[in-house]
Image (cartoon, rainbow, N blue to C red; front, side, top):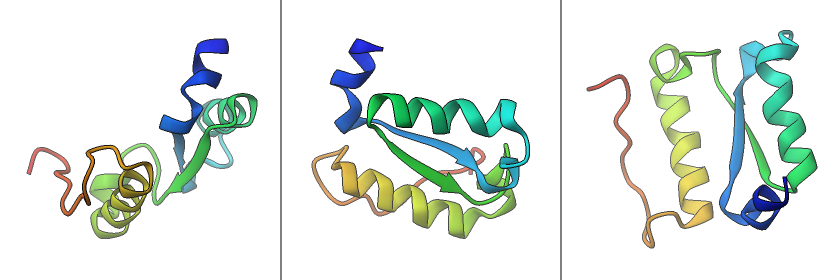
Length: 83
């Protein structure tokens, strides 16, 4: 936990919106974000949200990556499902 807390500014824990009612899927990411101080993002869909809601998923993913400045520049595209 200590290492995760130190890296919290670089982490975004995430879960699918459709998984809210499934504590085993949604709960760990939400709780880990709370315990570490890391961000938490709720993505559209469930386990395969990027294929169920590709546009909305990609927009949120790009926003999170840009907010964290993961690549040192704005991120403009994200591949999904091997496409």
